[in-house]
Amino acid sequence: MRALGIGFRAAADLSSLQDALQQVLLLAGGGIDVVVTESAKSREKLFREFAQVMGVPGLGITQTDLEQMITPTQSQRIIDKFGTGSLAEAAALAAAGPDARLVAERVISGDGMATAAIAES
Image 1 (cartoon, rainbow, N blue to C red):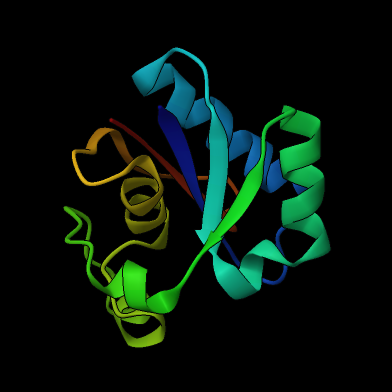
Image 2 (image 1 turned 135 degrees about the vertical axis):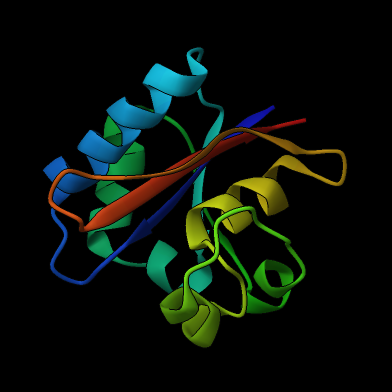
């Protein structure tokens, strides 16, 4: 199972998420089974549209689950907001399951509005 974790700012658009996706796929290759983000963000129109375009389920991860993930990337802004170093990495790891490992660490879209990481189990 391969999970794509996504983080994005309020000003992001579909091209921001698609750019982050393309960058992370260059590192990890292969397909994606699910796209995930923090649960409140998973209800946003942009995230639902992105999952639909990708043709995979879009899931939300609770902040409690995100806080349990140790990520190689550490952003103080994300630590303060979500309790983990990288929303994209933590969401991917949490969704991929207890034996998950990152196959692509966080990348940032060219416009700085979105991040993506891939984990697999």
